Length: 120
Image 1: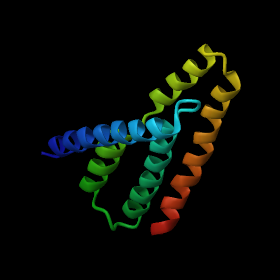
Image 2 (image 1 turned 30 degrees about the vertical axis):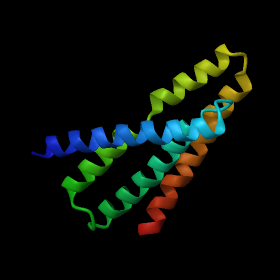
Image 3 (image 1 turned 135 degrees about the vertical axis):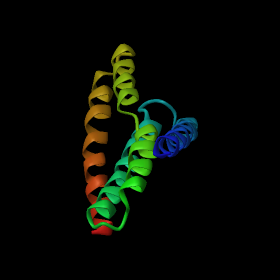
Image 4 (image 1 turned 90 degrees about the vertical axis):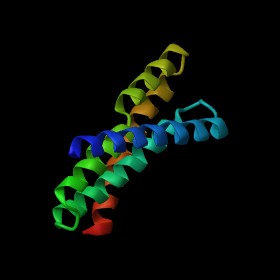
């Protein structure tokens, strides 16, 4: 039964990722893939919260699997971030590609730490 819950949460996470990425890209343009950056940073914040809640035994293991493995696993997207960086290089923007690799990495780590600290 847990597999069904994880699959449903994953479907919801993927749909939320698409909607947020589309909304942000429509508003800010595609000079940098801000939608993907926002998705990955907000997902890292959520993962930090889930990890903190699980570590303090506030969030039961099945819920951790559904939220982190299902929803957040489908919501965040490392592969899209890498493809976005390749596209920036292909379009003659290697500096933006490097920014797209480093900025989300630093922000995602800080967001995960913030999420953990919020609930610890």
